[in-house]
Length: 256
Image (cartoon, rainbow, N blue to C red):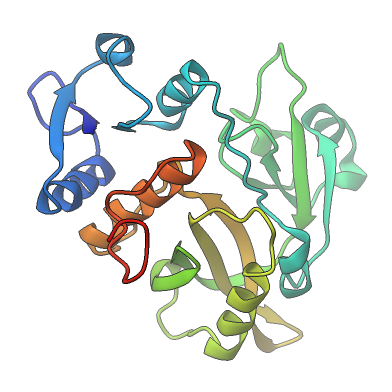
């Protein structure tokens, strides 16, 4: 097995996330191979390897092996914890109808653009293409005070890292536990992913809410310890490729 890691022309890893993952994989004894463009390695990557790159490039490798990643942003089991309504629309419909403004939108197409609160056409600059009327997920706007990323590896919440907001606010651990328990009821849940949480103010009261689920094959680490980060990536790749996870060191697992 080889861990392919994207680098810049000067040899440095292409992002902090890639460098962080490499630290974890190297400590676990993996072979690391650097490359600059996906074309360099496309012909040599096997279905036993892992590629550390950006989403589009990783999906190129998935397509090579007929792999499709499916990870719902808002699974039905977690919707009771959202504290807001969710619906779908199109980017053109949002742009053309002022009565639809005042909502948060994000693309259904994976990472086509960054989610944004829309209060007028100017907020949609850069959100889409003149050739494509993106389908978008819409939600009520919450007064978010602080946000966290929870990291799931083989059904265990290994860490929660803050990434945005006021440090005076803290999540309710009871709600986090309830979300994790609900996550475990999802039939085809990812074995490596993130569950994002937030504290929101509603009618002057704090509430801990579930924000969204994110697939683990190309996930920002936000300060997650590097070994856990590498294991999360390996868990998800192994699940998607239906192979043994050689970096799963849990007692009783196939990796032992």
